[in-house]
Length: 223
Length: 246
Image (cartoon, rainbow over all chains, first blue to last red; front, side, top):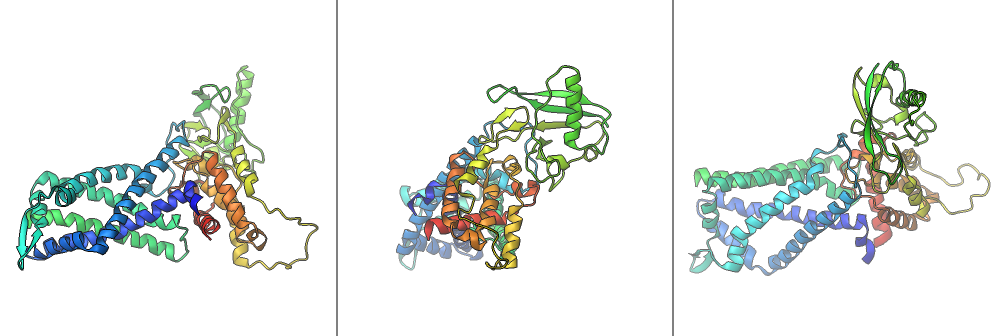
């Protein structure tokens, strides 16, 4: 059991499990964000964000989420370096075999997403959790962080909106391969179900990326 | 037909190779790619130049000896064929054709277009066999093999070990080769007995030899002359997890 993670397949297993965990997290994040544009006030969003920050179970899951993210990044880089080392002399003409297009650029899209995450977390998560630079708002006599106003302020800056749209497009490229690839790595391949998984991957990617892209656009123009 | 060939020339495994340009003229469209290289070699020998080294044997697509990386694709522009099955009519008159050896750390270039693929033999030696005394031919149907399983095994056994999967993979991964060698035995009653030990040892050897990691890109499947499917890689993963975790 212990040495499974020393092997190439074992490391891929970690990548896929961590990736699926992150895939499961995205719709939750999207659902909470959508509260900001689906309701007239920021109250629902702020209360949802408050619940996510203070609920004990969520706090435990959050630890797993960050652990999953770090493992996914660490093993992604580790495996990529091994892959580069496996071909020390490159071809004069790079291979153009018919393959899954997005799979060729996983490390590149990952690098962009990593930069996005640093900016995203420092703008919202760390501001709220560590620096406490978030305005306070009172609902029913109880104080909440007004994260909603923080988001709205950011998404009134055109450059910020463009940056978010661009990053979510790259996330979509990453997910288009990552979703079904995770199942293949787990050995879940089936004549009937694999095409279903691939279609679900496309649907998931479409919904998640369009959902996330809509929020800054909506706020910029309509809030 | 006339062609301009840019071919990788390398004196030996230690030497620094480079591309040399050759003009070949008067080639029949029905010439195979290897026959075209034979013609070029004869002309080089006539001029007292060193002929181009490349691997070949059966010239009918079943031995897995030939393997050239032609214009960015292992075994050339056609699908599901080996280099020896490629014909010059597939190219246009006057085309420039770039010919390279397989590129992967575990496949070092020996000379020109010849690479050492004994890394594959080492993976097989690690466990790609059934270590039982088979004795004389048994009575037919003594061991019942379901038709579906037999088909899966035969599909996997079509692998000729040419190395196109490694050559095509952007990570130089040998997963499709190992997967086919695992699959051909893992689904049969005779192979199940040693399945766990086999997959453990073969994957460990594959890793030790320095092949890259599979990222499910699918280039191996697209370039495999025998059409071995990625399904076998999923089976390899399952077999490996079962061997390690159960």
